[in-house]
Length: 396
Ligand code: UAH
Image (tube, rainbow, N blue to C red; front, side, top):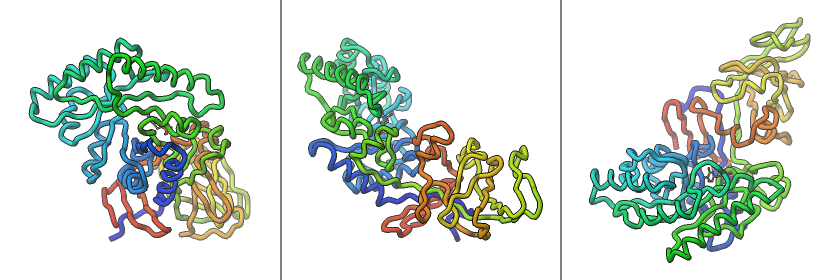
């Protein structure tokens, strides 16, 4: 039986993931590790498959946004260190113990409550690692003063259930040409590290670089970088892409096959709202993908697909499950392969282009592709795994 029964799929080139890890490996200091950020299902590429490949190619740990994402990695058999970067409700910490997952903390009251809960529920368990998050200018999560930082460290030192294993911060503007804000944030981070050392503390694992900072300031790598968007072969901003000092290979393509073709004999309108009128001789192909798959409706009358190595304009509104494209060559046939994101022949529709067309960032485009779309994994251009999130079926 086929792993999936629809003619729309995502292809993820695992070789590209490996190359990107190795490119960063060469770019950052030898002593600095690589934490592969696979939150949001590996930015839509598949957290388990990308995580495994990143670890195989030189990453030494993984990071996710929330505990459920971390447990999924463990259930898939991944044993490398996994850090939850975001907030974990105190009443869930027992799961972190059960699955040996490191958590982020930024408040001593949370440390107090988590310790009490664990002493009550599983007093003989091995302590779990805690990374302290400092807010140096992101204004999101993190301690915001030396007093708060020392208070949480001292509370952690007294906890038999939690072990202080890391300290980090996250940059807000590392992808910009103007470095004022990121330099200020780094200075604040350094002053926190200095305060800890002045108080006689031995620093645990220190990290601050996302993709952008890893590219621009590899000397700030400390013990590990947190590599997100670059892992997937995308740049955090157009400024970063244009610097061209770290060559990346995009890993994701979105493909489909034509479900229906018609050539206009007389004018006819296309899709809801009748916003496009096909003219005589125009060939209109219907593709089985829509906004319910995470293909943005903002691409209505605005986006493109590739057919026969040429651009085909999306005409009319993107529907829930289907879109229509105008095939300039008039040569379309049912079953022809169409590329929505990625390369075909000499043409390419990059995630950067799609993001720009709909007024967002490249990060959001693969994250939107959801459980309705099967993921096909390639190595050496051969299919090595097919996973369909809708049916939870996997074929190797
Ligand atoms: C705390 C944290 C994040 O929220 C995200 C990342 C990865 O960022 P990039 O995708 O820009 O590399 C790291 N750390």
